[in-house]
Amino acid sequence: MREEQHHKRWNEIKTNDSWAIFKIMGEFVNGYEKLSKIGPCVSIFGSARTKPDDKYYKLAEDVAAKIVDHGYGVITGGGPGIMEAGNKGAHIAGGTSVGLNIELPFEQHDNPYIDSDKSLDFDYFFVRKVMFVKYSQGFVVMPGGFGTLDELFEAITLIQTNKIEKFPIILVGTEFWDGLMDWVKATLLKQFNNISAKDLDLIHVVDTPDEVISILDSFYKEYELSPNF
Image (spheres, rainbow, N blue to C red):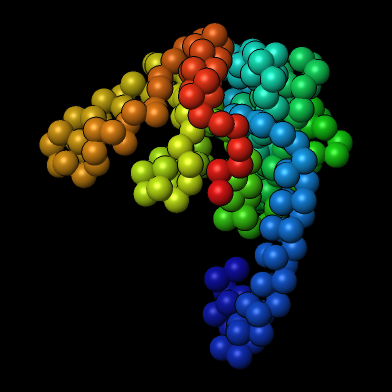
């Protein structure tokens, strides 16, 4: 891609950028049209590399099933690993199972547990991110890599800056997340004062599906279920 762009003239780049706007608009319109009809959902994030025999794959299945049993649908990134486990748990439990897939050079492919009418494909990460945030009533974040961390910190930033309504952010797996949260509290908050203590109020670290549901239910006893912007 770098070589291709290097050899393009500036006027060619300008023309391509102008036409890309229509493709971007098309992805937004398609996403809004489909996701506005699905009702309250919770997004589950995690690594595409997690195998079906991993304990966190099974845990993601169980979390998704529990979420569905309590009246929410499940949204994932539509791919393998934790995403597949989330869709599988929702599908087996008879609930709404949404997949927001994206074209990538490796790892990503549709999993078979997404509802046939709720599978969306994206070329642009930023459009896909908007869909996750706009139509999620909470983020459940399983162990993952850079993409998972990206979604997590973007959600925290949007809530911190009042760009979206606040919703629960639930990190599942204390053995995975405790080190990060210790660093956030000790370094970002106490040592450098780069965040406020209240920024951490909606972040929870848990280990079980019951804890996930308890946090969601407690939050929505106080707040209304609605799109975030």
